[in-house]
Length: 349
Image (cartoon, rainbow, N blue to C red; front, side, top):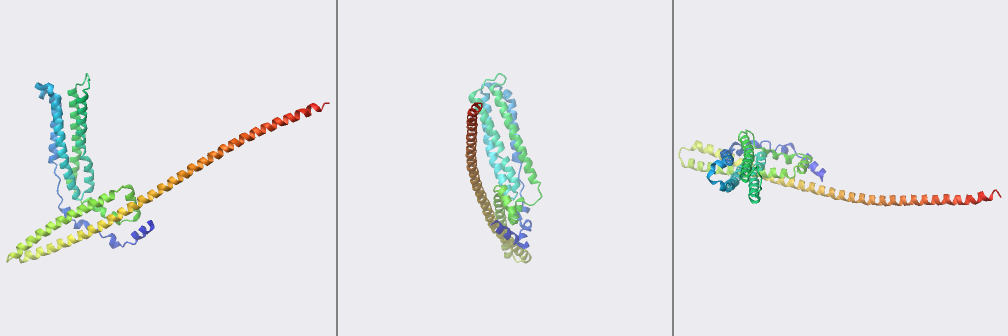
């Protein structure tokens, strides 16, 4: 079956392999990329700095309420945890927009970063809860000092992760390249061996890239549909006017061009869906082959264990036989000594 795939891939014509070479010129969203705002992230960093300042200056701020200092610190931590959860949903929305814009690599990188500030705040809140419940008696560090140290550590970790997020978003806003998700158009068109290697080592990453590409193409379709509706409305306005002959011709040409792009993107999306099914079938076939290899390997292991048992049994039998032969040899030597002794005594007489 692998040879059939090689033959099918080798029989593809150069026209088929060059089918998507001009895809970057037919991606309207690549010219309509929206920048991701970082003002919310900067505001959250300022909030973390205020939180750390509150932790440091708490004994002076709550000088008149020293008995309630721990309660106030825990309350401020809970409030910041809730704000962090809300802000995390905002960052998830921003990362989703980046993914829909076709920048798969950035979305995958940011998807792991945006969870870390909330995780840092959650771990810090759990540590403060343990301190409040167990009330450890440390002569050097009172409970309020432990709580303040935990708060500062929370702010430092969350602020570090937010700085990484802001740096990546700034790098994304500075990009001047086509969406990287378009590169996954070429992978299913390569030789079968390279596709099998991708499916085996990436662990389903190819399917995820193909899904991101389909979402990007869907956004292209929606954008083109809105453009067609807008151009149709403009065309109707010019048709109602008496002096709109030249604009009417231009709009008709633009409408026809957009319609052609829409049909092209629709055919490409259908092609990508079929290629995605092919990639998944190849991954399933590779998994089944690996399963068969595991089964055969287990059979070989069982056979080796059985042969080791037989070899051990024959070794024990050989050892027993050697011991029996040694005993027999010793008994023969003893018998020879006994028979030679009477002959020696009878010869002098």
